[in-house]
Length: 140
Image 1 (cartoon, rainbow, N blue to C red):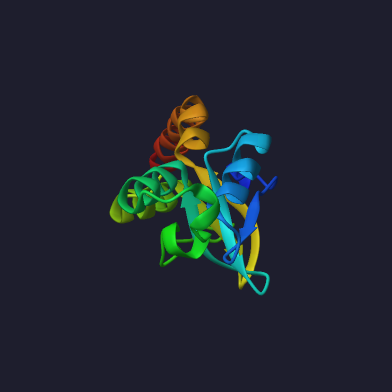
Image 2 (cartoon, rainbow, N blue to C red; image 1 turned 135 degrees about the vertical axis):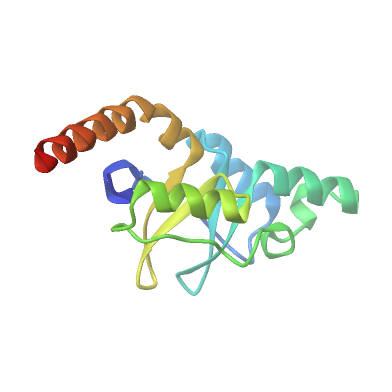
């Protein structure tokens, strides 16, 4: 199974120069836990709910006074649509991230989240059994 099979393409983005208030409003309106941060149209970072809480706790400033670029997580850890889910999960684990933007070159094409992976766990088990059966048949 590939990243392109599970990734979502309904992306929520926010400019690096925007305020955290603007980013949080986008997150709430779209019912998502993060926004992809862009600069000149290119993905450069990700802002998560945890990043927002950390920035407000550390600065004590209102959301409208904190720029997204100051709070967003970077460098941006990404994957490609043709990457296997197994490799994408390894990337998430190795980098301790729960959300993995999907890029094709420099074009942002989707996002794969830990929730997406968990929701399809049954599909992975079925695919593993199918591959085992194919391997057993090949050996005979």
